[in-house]
Length: 369
Picture 1 (cartoon, rainbow, N blue to C red):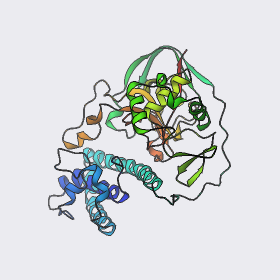
Picture 2 (cartoon, rainbow, N blue to C red):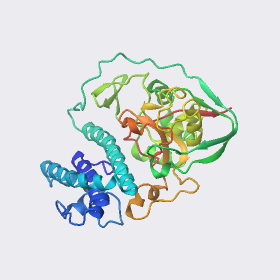
Picture 3 (tube, helix red, strand yellow):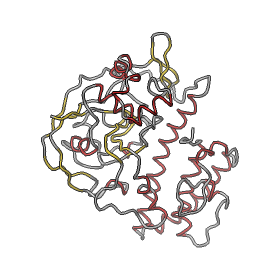
Picture 4 (cartoon, rainbow, N blue to C red):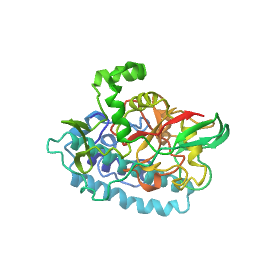
């Protein structure tokens, strides 16, 4: 799949990030492990130089995994000296912190990409042992009301945040209500049973065209066996649990379901306003004000991924990290089962094209009050 990368590539690319943006500018006599890696493991930084095409990363049978691990060790050794310099250089320390958070993002991508890869294996291998925990019970959905008014959104204060999470600013919100819990598999089954994938009146035009072209009939990884929906998971194939939060749907599917349900998707600012109500520390998940917002699925919003007022990308190639993608993408909020815990914060702005389904992406409904 063109959007997915092998685990070996993720391992090499995260070392490449430190080598390119931290080690080379900091250590004048640094000798690269392999000059060819500068192009092989560049993701999308045009300011750095040429890149190996993303859809062809899976064809890189060489370098070997052993070679990639040796490359990581080579870069790690150089990073020790960089960390010493960073103790006296706040800007370098901030760049290293960005690299650490970048690596955490790729830890999540490794899981999402492996899940997609293994789903095409006829033996359907499990990535993790089967979960023996008791089956969860879906909570009764209620509606959390928010009156009209000005809300402050975006990151401010201490703690790490990506540049696209700020600056903090004010937005006007009309009165609305947000569902207390995400949409479940059982909820979505009702949409399917009601012909949701066969009713063009529920879909955005581009979404309907995509659904027809891709022959979507259910979320990604779902398969019908006799009268039972089954899905491929990290634990292999299993029956769809109607009480679990829905995952692996596109923005198009989320929008169509919301319309079918007589509701809509929230804006990212509505989502954040509710999430901040009880706990407003950006570094902590607001689980007491917005249940199940972190650790299950990313939640699609109706907000296009765009810069906040006053946003300025960093100078140089590292400035390509987020800003260049602020076009034809939609924002997701929260965190998924694969997200590193440190990325579970109310201001985090994930983003994907509207047809993307291989992430743990679900939804939470909103409606006008």
